[in-house]
Image (cartoon, rainbow, N blue to C red):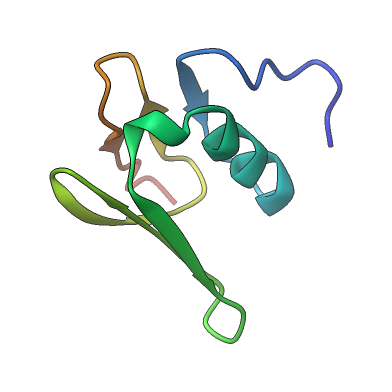
Length: 76
């Protein structure tokens, strides 16, 4: 875990450290219903008011509006 990350911030950019992403999500539990992680496919799914999002490295997460908003970064 990186010590300079602010897990209470309303926005977060997903990196390769899954525990950090899960920590940020846990600080913003009011913005989504649940999440699941498939260890075999290494896919993190977040269930929220607008549906289900697959969370990937480079995604921008925003919990500012009381719901989780995900912007995917499709640049490889």
